[in-house]
Amino acid sequence: MRFQDVISINDFEKDDIEYVLKTAELLERELKEKGTLQYAKGKVLATLFFEPSTRTRLSFESAMHRLGGSVIGFAEASATSVKKGESLMDTIRTVENYADVIVIRHPREGAARLAAEVAKIPVINAGDGANQHPTQTLLDLYTIKKEFGKIDGLKIALLGDLKYGRTVHSLAKALSYYNVKLYFVAPPGLEMPRHIVEEISDKVDIVETSSLESVIPEIDVLYATRIQKERFPDPAEYNKIKGSYRVDIKILEGAKETLKIMHPLPRVDEISYEVDKTRYSAYFRQVWSGVPVRMALLGIVLGVIE
Amino acid sequence: MKELKVSAIHKGTVIDHIPSGKGLKVLEILNLPEDSTILIAVNVRSEKLGKKDIIKVEGKILSKDEVNKIALIAPTATVNIIDKWEVVEKKNVEVPDEIIGIIKCANPNCITHYEKVKPKFKVISKKPLKLKCHYCERTMEEEIIAKNLL
Image (cartoon, rainbow over all chains, first blue to last red; front, side):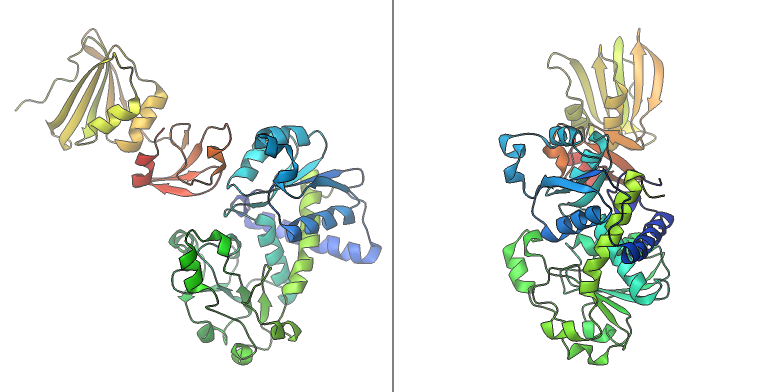
């Protein structure tokens, strides 16, 4: 077993990432051949979702069931002892008696790291505030690898709210392990934070722009993100920027035929529905990628997959 | 003008070579008992720094944690342990690689503000001082660090 918890993409070396992607690929193939697998038979996953995230929770539950294991948990803090004032640390100390692995989603940043320090069983971070969502990053990489058969050599644009979007922060960092060219396309005021640009700029070529039109002909992957209203400290700032970019058929006229559009979902209005039916859309296949990647992570931390 | 003699107390600690103007802040973060005997000298001539502040605390030997705290706002400081009017030990303050329990995280949404856990930081740069919260991964720079000392 290479790692015991999955807390931050910053804890992953390139070898770890490749190991997860390879394991996911093998599991996906085996799943297609055999249907449900039995690697986690008798194991219990506890999903502790202190804030709602239906997609991520269902994806983890699906992954655990497909590994042959079972799932317990809650989908919002209001239904738990947290409402009675229980600390996160006590919740973890309690739940670890019922389960073999914990997946935690929490509104506070650093909650997953703290949970992992307290728990005797493995902990996987399914999102801690605006900080990390490492399994999303791994499934994004897996999707790119599946769509192109490789990651090296690609030109990848990250579009949208690059300031507050934790998904794009982690993805940019993970992509810097590969031989790629990155385009950060953001409306003024929502640019990629300087510390991230500085951290990775000596490893990858970076182009920063606010013009999607200018980069569309060059890129292989367009990773679009929603402007997340809930992350804006000032609603006026959100209202000024919302709807400032949109991927539609017209803008895609100049794109490479092989361009793939990805999105962590949910979308609001940043990708037009007419794009769904085109060869470019990869975002619903991206949703599926979450299952084999999370199966791989669960299997690895449980020690049932070598 | 002759420099002040460091050891002009009988027993205790002298914090020398504090950057000029930081002496009162150092005193504040040491949070010494109200009845402590303290001598403070501000804007003293110094060959090393041009001007410096000095704090002399009668009857108290500073712990390692307290010394580390000083390093965060006065990295040039030297700590002299005094016994019978003489310097018996001299230590340079140094920012450690990890800082536990003496600074709070500047991120108001960090879990350390809501759970009974000691804030922990990795020092990612000593000059200029830059810390990264072990829990929320947010980085803090010098000016913010000084405002968040516990």
